[in-house]
Amino acid sequence: MQTQLAQLVATATQEAAAVSTRAEMEAYKARIVGPNGSLTAVMKSMATLSKEERPVVGKLINEAKKAVEEILAALQQKIENSEIGAALGAAVDPTLTSPDAAAGSLHPLTRTRERILTTFRKLGFTVAEGPEIETEWHCFDALNTPPDHPARDMQDTLYMPKSFRSADAPRRGEEALVLRTHTSSVQVRTMLTRKPPFRIVAPGRCFRRDAVDATHSANFHQVEGLWIDKNVTLADLRGVLDFFVKETFGADAEIRLRPSFFPFTEPSFEMDLRSPNLGRLSNRWLEIMGCGLVDPKVLELCEIDSKEYSGLAFGLGLERIAMLIHGIDDIRHFYNNDLRFLRQFA
Image (cartoon, rainbow, N blue to C red):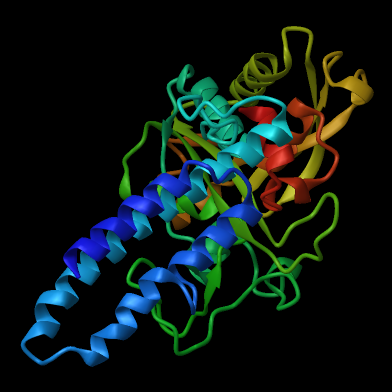
């Protein structure tokens, strides 16, 4: 039996050299391990052996079977390489780097965020962060937003169930927990935990009950800025924003401040940008952020003496800035995980 199995493996090895196509391999495989194959016939003969002979012969058959499987695997690989080579018009070189093994890269929103933070770090701002689930007090009340303000309506703000609890945002009484609608809540937390003077920027995700379209998303990102010190004025606000715009959009970029209203700043402004470096939007005034001087009532709510200190605040949409920098016309591209889009920023 041992001699028979050795001869079977030797014959299989010799015949494998002549196999070059998938059809030939299937016929070759059938001759050895098919229902009427030579190895199959030997395995069937196990039934005629005595109990004493079966362990010995079984071991020999398993060794032969393993050798045949290795021959078949090598043959399969040879034929697949041959087929790929024929399709490509050249032989396969297994040492070549796969064209699909592209290195990963930062998401365009991450790139834009880091670019913005780098700009404000040059002005002495540090980065601050806070929880995405917030109390109504941090998100609205401390920012001088009255209970009947439209921003607090169910159709605008996403409220958590009353039974929900968050260690990062303990309730003050019966107030609700919300998914923060802006990162201004980080400004509140900073004013409550740090003594002036300080300058911070707060990047992070925000959530609103918005219908998704080319310019809106229910999940988006903001970068808020806050500077609290003695004698902070509108001149400081304009200087900070002018520096940011020129660093981001080029030395020829201009800004203008239009009077507006926000509950947490007084006076309040919408800031417009104009730049010759924005493609089809070049040299047009575009609204990109809200800003103003911190309302004295907000300072008092956050336990800062408004007679001694003043401050400036601003908030911008990260997606909006990224779209202007890269000429992107649809916010949904940032979230579709389409590699054709993302690889443009590698």
